[in-house]
Image 1 (spheres, rainbow, N blue to C red):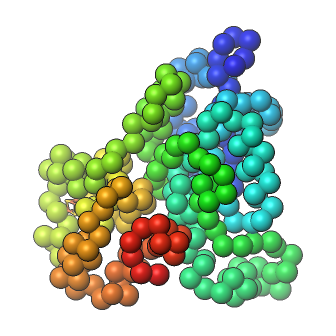
Image 2: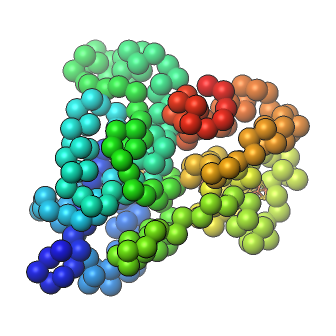
Length: 255
Ligand code: SF4
Ligand code: SF4
Ligand code: SF4
């Protein structure tokens, strides 16, 4: 807490595109009143000051280097509440796809003759390194959901993250199901909260928010197969955002 009684919060970035932090900035622009109830002490995208005393730490990005781990442990020691912000932090996300190829090949491809100068290891979500209290899913996070989560945390409540599938929100928007249009979609097993934004604009859900806690994996696979996907295609669609979980057998699926 500050002298004014405002809880101190901090934002940290690891390997990411920083799109989730940009969404936070967007939220602050449209809801500046948030700044009246919290004090932000670290937020590299928005300020140069760096306070080390904070109550809530929002962490964006995956852990992709051994040396990231010490920084994560330090954040965990300081923060009373740690929140994974977005798919990279929550799931490993697209960063974890690099594990589909030998690490040296990936490093060579990205850094060429400077490959030896860059430390890297298999990308992983933050909770593979430190305990995480809550995750705000999505790639990027949903602005309204972020604000609702901050409000809940400040009230001492659990953030209101849905545990029902995207299909529910899709039906509420009265969308025509993409399966009836000859496309495929992971909406039946993916966690809602994004207002079904992709199918609303004719794009398949690719599971960026992770799966619901009890997905009907075998039915989902059967439906995808009935719509022409091979087992390899199904693995590909399943692993866009959750390849770490599939590899670690944290969810059903084949790596
Ligand atoms: S979750 Fe998506 S938008 Fe957010 S930092 Fe990762 S890649 Fe960027
Ligand atoms: S388009 Fe996707 S999210 Fe919408 S109802 Fe069909 S399967 Fe569910
Ligand atoms: S529809 Fe699926 S892929 Fe699109 S934002 Fe929502 S969860 Fe992510």
